[in-house]
Image (tube, rainbow, N blue to C red; front, side, top):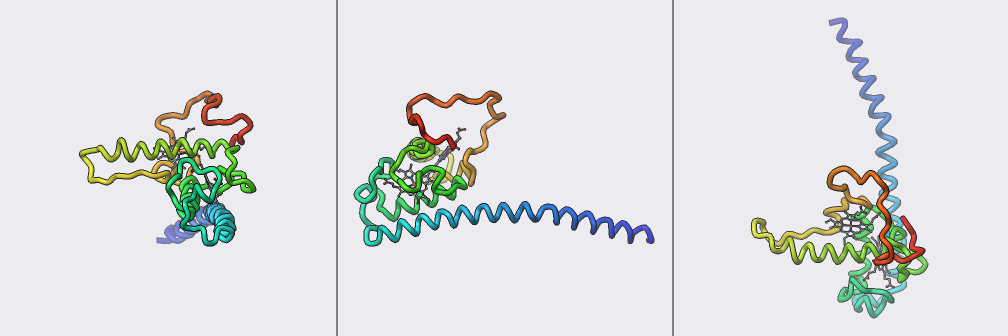
Length: 177
Ligand code: HEC
Ligand code: HEC
């Protein structure tokens, strides 16, 4: 019985040491997410204020460079922007030059357009035709990205650096992040 007491203290000591060590990490994760949300909110509020009265107009009549989101309203485009940011765990700057929203300079702006085309085809051409499942089945950015920039690859990551494709969707001088 006597041996039980020191063991109990040792146990309490170890568990409190572990939880003390874990908590700062968890806190900083939470702060990072919160800052991104606030950052996106800051740009959205600014845009919403400057576009008052135009919320229901077609986005391509208000913005300069709408291609993949043709047919959406201005407010729908802004809420899609926030969803994309959330799905990838990023702020607007990941895909935009924030002083020039129409700019395509960021690689991720163009990559996103390719992703939207892929995602639409996935839903319309593949998932909708799967007979063994309850329909509708739909996937969005969040299904693969799950708040990460790059979803987990199938199998081991390629060992060598993968060369960037020439031309195509990527323009020379585009930011590389
Ligand atoms: C994952 C990449 C991505 C993120 C994150 C993102 N955007 Fe976009 N954004 C795009 C793409 C791509 C387009 C062009 C859509 C199209 O072709 O229809 C666009 C278009 C826009 C436009 C229209 C620009 C114009 O003049 O044509 C605005 C405004 C905009 N985004 C604001 C935002 C804001 C604000 C945020 C953050 C809350 C944000 N975006 C987050 C990729 C992104
Ligand atoms: C079926 C799964 C899937 C869906 C759905 C999907 N993505 Fe992706 N996405 C990927 C994969 C895989 C990569 C990584 C490619 C690589 O390894 O370079 C990626 C990469 C990206 C990148 C480049 C990120 C980087 O750091 O290189 C952007 C931007 C992106 N996706 C945006 C989107 C958006 C926006 C949507 C929703 C419209 C979307 N994706 C939907 C699988 C998906």
